[in-house]
Image 1 (cartoon, one colour):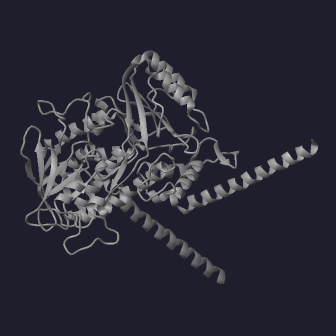
Image 2 (image 1 turned 45 degrees about the vertical axis):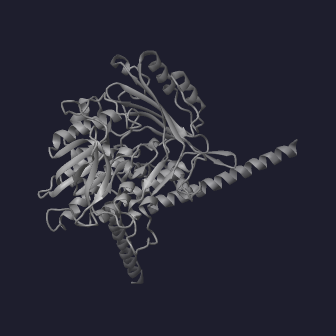
Length: 578
């Protein structure tokens, strides 16, 4: 009888743990990801908010914000300094080169979450990108770490393989054609003005129109800063308008910062060189690429082991015939010009497993036949995070998206995904608050709700990227921090890589090379989904994964010490014999 009681109690406790775990996971999924927001994204609200949503900036995050606002506001105005439309009012073609976007012609990668968001916002997105020669197909980045392949899931989500220029052009064309209530103005936002009726809101936006001396004032129901990293003028606008600081008689709270202090920066001394070629259709299939030229968008990706090297290699196919090679690195000294110098740099990279020979053969064939299109050398400016959520007395009708909030290392290819996360969060908050609105205007809770949710969804991008960048000695940390920041996160990431590795993983332990073949497809899939923003970030901390990491690490330590002892014993025996 006692046995059955103990069994029943154990079963009850096990069931409670499973139920609570699922409830917690569901809550984290809603809080940390946009996955539950996607079904409603792109559907027009029956009762739109009266007034104008002013989007400051017309690049990727600005276009996404405008498209979202078109479903919620009666009018949307996008203010963009650069002229992005021709004389007829139509968006410029794909071959138009923007001057204000540092990486406009550089190699780009797009996670599956981009495609999910854009399909919801623009039902004809797939047809539009295919019309410019881009592709939509299962995601495959052919990722390697120090030459060791990290497998993708057997049936990965689809993504789009396209150049940044074509991506933004298609996005602008679809926005213009799908949203008649969006108006584009060619000018620069120079400031915001507090409402004369409600000092918790922005009442209008001041715009310096191109070619016009006096600023133009636009009444605003919502203001969105999408000016990007180069301008990111939001904190200055808000401070001049009297926002983001304690009111008279108030003091900053324990966890609050003045609006002028919310921006934190660090410099990874990142630089990359990108060379692109136009490859003739008749030789595309003869290129020595495993599986064929059009097998995958990213033909090869190799990220460095910080203990061995500082360089990353990316090779990608995009648009109908564009092949791009990029070498980036922390404090990168090499500046390869031409294919011969490119091969020299590739051979100089220290990896656990060598870069495959077909990469060099590919470069040789491209050099002989393809037409060079452009060669760019980008010195990435310091990275920054504007912590708006820490400023007091923020306007209730202001938000910021994309690089205006956070600029992270472009080598990890998360910029456009970050903009999609922001746009989807904006949509989710507007829908959530629509039921609370007492009339056809924006809820006074908008600002707080948006910053709480948006911060929870992008914070991990900043912390994980910073931890990675801090593993390189050349990185200049955030003021008050040092390179020890994120040490445990880096160690945990290394253990995940070992679990995910498809090939032999070389582990260093007291100058001893220990080769261990450790494969775990389930861990690899969970890690992949988290990296692609398709899983909950805490999924990599599941007890089943943590236990595998602890067991694997312990076993490797024991094996390493055993081999070290065996080696010393052999040396001792040899010395006796001699």
